[in-house]
Amino acid sequence: MSEKILIVDDEAAVSAGLALLLRRQSYEVRTADDGDKALEECAAFQPDLILLDVMMPGRDGFEICREIKSRPEMRLVPVVLITGLSEKTDRIRGIEAGADDFLSKPIDVSELNARVRSLLRLKSFTDELENAEAVLFTLALSIEARDPYTHGHCARLSELSSRMGERMALPAEEITALRRAGIVHDVGKVVVPDAILLKPGPLTAEERAMMKQHPSAGEKICAPLKAFRLVLPVIRHHHERWDGSGYPDGLKGEAIPLTARILQVVDVYDALTTNRPYRKAVSPEEAWKILQAEVEGGWWDGNLVDEFRAMMQGKEHTPETVKNGELASAVAKRATKSAGAR
Image 1 (cartoon, rainbow, N blue to C red):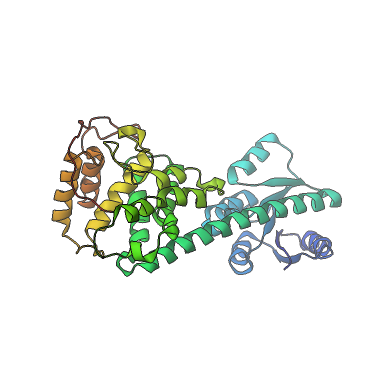
Image 2: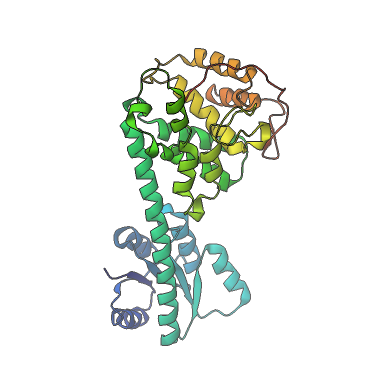
C-alpha cells in the first residue's frame, strides 16, 4: 500500500507541482487549499505525512499544525512546514506548534524527496510500535475474557489508577503508564492454566507458585516496547506488599514503586467488590473494612488506601498525603497479616 501524503497550500500551482513530483514516487497524494479543508482531509484521508504551507489566508500553518498535533489520532503523523520565512523566531514558532521538519521556498526537489523518505520511514517505525501496543492490549483483554468474573476489570483499573495518578499530581508520563498498566498488568497470566486461574477453591502450594510467575512473565512480554519502560515496574511489582511478604521480589515499603502501589490498591478494591470464582463480591463499605484490616496487617500503603477511599467518595486530598507529587512517608510499621486477593 502506498504511503499517503497531504499537501496544504493556498497556491494551486505549488500544490499541483508538489503533487506531481510525489505521485511520480508512487505516493498517494491529496491536496487542500486552506486549514479547515486540511483538517477535514486529515480525518477522511488519514495521511502518513503532511506538507503544510505556513503563509495561508485565515488560520496560518502554525495554528493548523498545532491543532493537528492536538488530536490523539494525528499526534504521530509528521508535519513538514513549508515556508519562505527565514527568521529564527519563525522556526521556533514552528517547533512549538509541533512541526517535525521544515522546507524552505523555493523547494529543492532532491531535499524534498530525502525529507519525505526519512519522515515516512520514521512513521512506519512508530506505526509498528503502536501495532505492538495494540497487540499487547488485545492479548491482555483476551486473558481477561478467559475469566467471566473479571469482565471490565482492566478498563476499571486503567481509569481508576490514572485518576489516582492525577490526584497524586504525578508526572503526565507516569499517569499514562498507569493507564496502560491497568490494561496489561496481568498479561503474564497467559502462562497460567485455566484450571488454576478459574479454580473455585484455595490454590495448592504448587498452583500458587505457578500463579506467582505472572508478574515477571508479564514484564518479559512487555519489555521489548521502550514506550512501556514506566509500565514495567507496575507489572512486575503490583503484588508486592508493604511488609515485604509479596512477590516476586519481596520489596518493602517505599521500595515498591509508587505507581505499583497505586495500582495494587485499586486492584484489590476492584477484586473485593466484584464476584470471583473463589468468593462473592462484598459491598464497598465491607471492602474498605477489609482493606483497612490489611493495612493494619502490613500489606498495603495506608496513606494510599485513605487517598483512594477519599477519591471514591468524592472528597478532597487528605492532609499531608501529597507533597510535590510524592507520597508523604507517614505510615507506621505493620506486622500481622490478613486476607487478600490473588
